Length: 334
Ligand code: DAU
Image 1: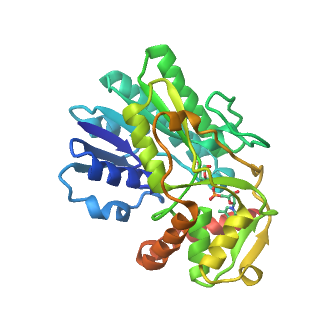
Image 2: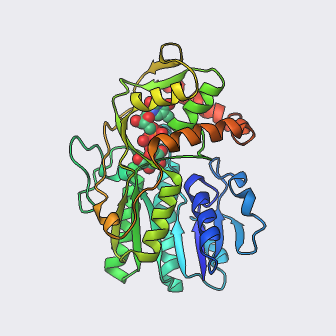
């Protein structure tokens, strides 16, 4: 079997490819990745010479690049490729609409033309919007509130429309906040850990009482594989870790885990525009399909901190150049 994975040099995509190569001997993987700021070849250095792995540099918005990556054919397409950072979408939404919506459209057309037997869209709990109480189920209305979440919701709706209109064999996973090794240091966990290692303060947005549900990247990758292999086409599956924490609770775990103190290392900064207070997922549907998360949160967070400590050579080069430019723009706006 041959699978096309897009955005496979990113955080979750690279974990997925590593998992597939390790546990599915019958599958070879073609990775199509545009190598934007978040696509890092170092994420797959350990498998780059695997004969079952092929890399194609290219953009999912480019139908020619997609056709070339598909080559003689693939049995499945798994779309991880996306612009994903909420703060960047607030600064500049255009790339999000382009990659997340148009890119998904190009892949759906490729699925249709080539008769690919399975298409999985990696989506997010953010499409449900702010959830004051209770848990979002897969049939809840989509109420995205950031340009990022709106672009992902637009993509989800295209995917589902292709199922209704053309009978496309699609699946969608909607994951919660994911953490673990190899996450680009703009997201809260790697940003805070790398700042703390460097004895720098960490910026908590607003009152820090916002709630996110935390899911280890290995559990997220396994969930996507599970849905790809066992999900019922036309369906959406929520993927959550059942570890809700306020940002302040998470911050305390990270600050203390890095041997620093809340008094000296936490800086309260202006809130994110339109900041969602809470996301929460009902994951009964995926659990009924046989998946459940395996990594306990405390253990996962401890090993994640240890990974960033042991892998400075992975993240230090990332906190330069484009990254510093982004932070300059980010803080100029606040
Ligand atoms: O919920 C799933 C989503 O999780 C994914 O779809 C997104 O791609 C991913 O970026 C993430 O979105 P969030 O906005 O929740 O993640 P982020 O790490 O940016 O922020 C987590 C929370 O921490 C959020 O409430 C904002 C807050 N925060 C974030 C940063 C970067 C801070 O307080 N300070 C910060 O410096």
